[in-house]
Length: 130
Image (cartoon, rainbow, N blue to C red; front, side, top):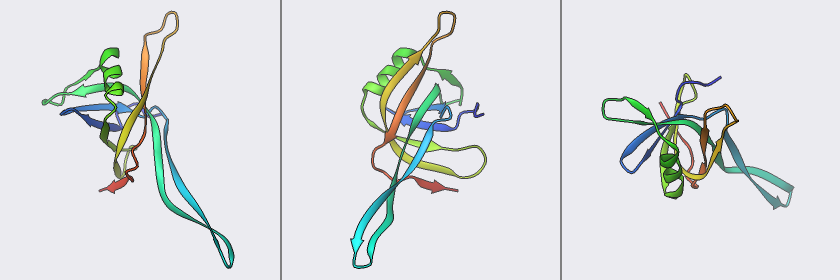
């Protein structure tokens, strides 16, 4: 279970952190070609998508404050490409650019409101960092 922030996004000069909520997908793009020898498939790139929960803004002192519903909706409606860093626990990190494609919220009768920001890549390929 991922409970610590594992994704960082930067928008409008601000830094935000969140958790990918067990929903981060990388899919290879497969191209099929017809040759004299028959059909051949190759991987030509990849796409990625997921959702982020528990989004907080990080200030200059590294203190994190959970953003409210209005701020989450504003991030989604801005419709801007957003650079991000994904760190899946121990090991390497990955960088890319995402588009925040939708905002989702849920709450039961006695539950606190929770929301997520859904994203997909902007066509930029993921890059592995040290």
